[in-house]
Length: 175
Image 1 (cartoon, one colour):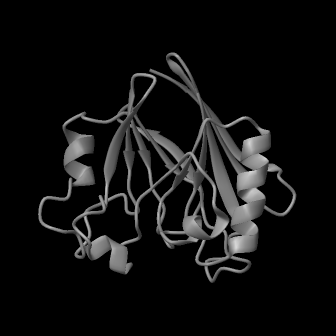
Image 2 (cartoon, one colour):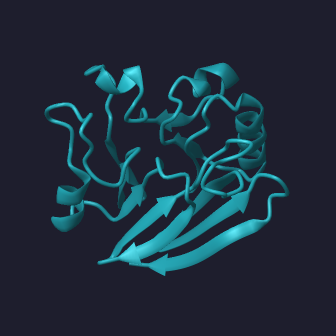
Image 3 (cartoon, helix red, strand yellow):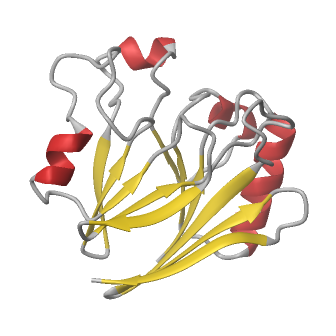
């Protein structure tokens, strides 16, 4: 299974369109958008997108929209969240990422918020932050996005730069 990972598009629709086109050309089965901005996906009219809102979004306060989702991708339990930890804007009943991680309820955490691209493995949980899609960012990171390929008990994770689609980071992991 091939999954595109996007976060923090912040109304940079042109960049979002470029990423979605690139990922679709790579044959992704699904695209995940991890918030900021939840409604950006509506602007591009793409299908096969799963999303969660950012913590400061009005959508985050709507109990009909899940702020965090746990998905099963080929037997891997994957948490989709904007923040890697609980947040003061969480709604009552929102799953707490740290509880899910500590209680070994998930295998992969897909998150955004920091705008800092990251791939790391800690206590057998793979953490992936695809970065952001803004033209410029105060943290100094170029626009990036992620790609996750799941092949049975193996993961291939890549973070690409938007400018030239060069692999910024790459990690392979096994269960």
